[in-house]
Length: 213
Image (cartoon, rainbow, N blue to C red; front, top):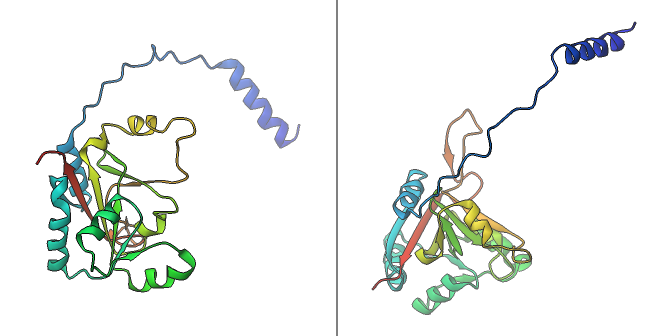
């Protein structure tokens, strides 16, 4: 008997002497409904080093304009989404660059972009996660390259769990790319030292927009 045969013999002997028995899980445990908790979402985002402003939807452009002046943000990049259009209307003379063509704009994006502005299509309160759909009007690169990423999200689009978020995308409705953002880009690959901005924006600013006046 060679070594291979001896190993197989031991395996067969072990299986015969102690046959596996099916595990009785006692049925599926009942799922506890998760409530929509916006305060928890804010806490989760802030714990991940995001900056969150919660204010009426009509107020975010003016608030952001003040923040931009304070932070001296001048090189803006936007997409053709709701947030980009609102910002252009608020700042018609703003030097914001509309990202429309990768081939001709990529060098400028990587070399000069300071701030990107995006519209989130939803959010998950349980995990403090923003959901951004990327497509030709809002390329994924826009949320990855500039060192500061500002995201606008309406509270009316929030859900409690990831499952509820995915349930909104039925057959044929899933976009080619969904971006889940729960904080600035960070890594601890090198000597387990946490560093921000290694693979994406080092700063995330979230405008959580309420419907009330």
